[in-house]
Image 1: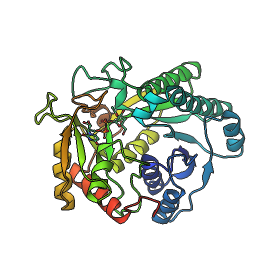
Image 2: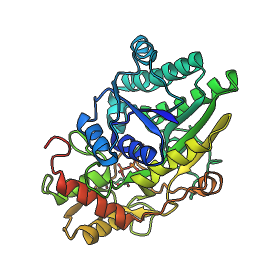
Image 3: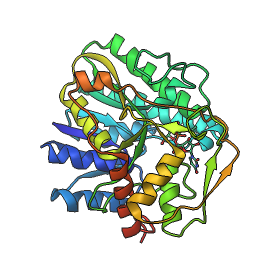
Length: 337
Ligand code: UD1
């Protein structure tokens, strides 16, 4: 297939681009580079040996999107582009709703006008809120008391996809609810390159390891978990990327929703230990108060994706730590060396 990959220069997008190309698909990267780098696309081309075309575009500008895509030939859209900083979304809710909703709406309208029916949407386990049971399957209630406009924007986008499919039955859509992506391509050429101070655990740890930050703050050790720190389901970004390809290759009319996670819960201290082991670097840390909006445990039941997409994770947390460290140590300043 010829796949329009929005957000294709980002962390998940760059790995998804590579896996798509390896599986024989053509990729067109669409990105506004507001939180990503052209260098990432250059490295996708270098790793794959394929010259990847790029469209620089802010998708929430509907007219610009219509103009830019008018002459572009594609069979499917994987929509990853969006704003994703939870804390920032609390400060700038209208910006988050506008950018994250307008871009999906523009894409779906353009697809319908063009008769392009295949749509994969990047959602998040954040739509489950504070879970009432774990591991979380897709039948777990979603969109209840979410902690941030970011989370709501993901949930609203899911509703938009469902609404579009009701009105346009030919639409073939998959909603992928990601758990916590970590790791990098084993080459160390592409990886996660957050701007500013990382919000997420793994990039913070790798920046401590590389000497950019003094110590990790562990956000709370009083949760009802084995060691008191938050438990998450960490998934290697290449396993996640393969989940997108599996979803795309089995797409059919309707909307299907899948959790993409490993099914394994790891605490903050488990991740610290796994990283220390994989990298040989000590990670100093200090326990700080819990972060607002965090939940104790988020852990996937990936059974549905395993069965219906014939997909499962094959890479361990240790491999993810090794690959994250390989990326960060080779690129201490990310793409801006
Ligand atoms: C966060 C978002 C989630 C989003 C995802 C995208 C929140 C509340 N949730 O997930 O909506 O989809 O990122 O990647 O922000 N931790 C520390 N110290 C740190 C950073 C994190 O102890 O410096 C802990 C957290 O408390 C948590 C775990 O590490 O227990 C994972 O945190 P993080 O990587 O930020 O992911 P989530 O919060 O699960």
